[in-house]
Image (cartoon, rainbow, N blue to C red; front, side, top):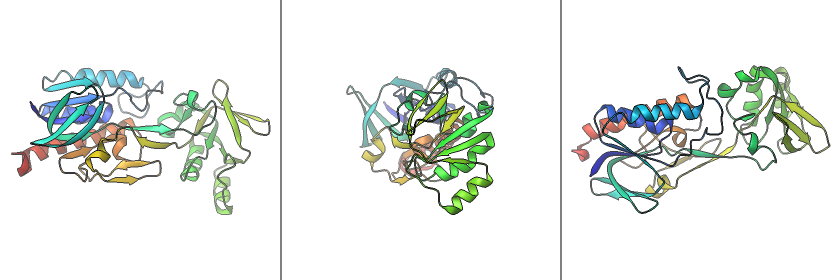
Length: 299
C-alpha cells in the first residue's frame, strides 16, 4: 500500500504532524524508536494545559488520542534508511520491513552530548538543565550555576539570573573578556574560574579542583547535539549548523531541500521545547497535506 505520508519519529512534533494528516483522512504511518529527548525529565513545563505534567504522560495521552483515527498506523522500530521510489519514497526498517509513502516527515529528534564530567549525566533533567523557561521557575530562586560549555555560554549566563543568584563556572576553558565581565557584573553573576572536578549531592554540588564545594539548587549548560538518525543525510537534505549542533534546513512550511521531504521538531530547529515542537509538527503536517493536494506530481 502506498501511504500518504510516513513520519519518522513519534514524539511531540511527529505526533502533531500525524494528527493534522489524520484529520484530513490521509493514511499515515508513524515509526517511533521510543527515545524522547525529554525522557530524563520528571515534569514538563511551559506547555499550555499540560504545565507540570510528566512528559511521558503527555506523550502517552497524545498517542492514545492520535490512534483514535483509523487511518493512522504506529510501528515501534527504527528506520535504517529511506530513498526515493516510484510514487514517493521507500523506507526500510531495521529487521528488513519496507514501507512506501508519497511524503516523508523527519521528526526523529536529536541527542544531547554532555561534557565528560563525573556526576553530570546522572543529574540531567532533574537538577542539570538546558532550558530555564522549562525548569527555572521550580528552582525557587535558589543559587544556580551555569557551566560554560560552548559558544553560547555568555548568553546563558546573562539569562539565568532571572531565576536565582547565579555563578558562572568557566571550567578553566572559557575566559570572559573585560566587556563580558562588566556585563555579567550588572546581572549580579559571580565568576568561578577554578576547573570543576565533578558534580555531586542531592541537587548539583560543584566539586572544584582546589577542593572547594559549591552547592547549587540547579545547574544550566548548553550541550552539543547530534541528529539521532542518518536518514536526512542519506536523502541529501541540506543541514545548517546551529549554536548547539547540526539541524535540517527547512523553509517556513517545514519543507527540506529534497522535494517531498519535510522535517519538524528539534531535528529541524536550533532549540528544544515541547510547545515549539508541537507547533512545528502541526505546520509540517498541514504543509504535507497541502502538497498532496496541490503539487502536480502528487496527482
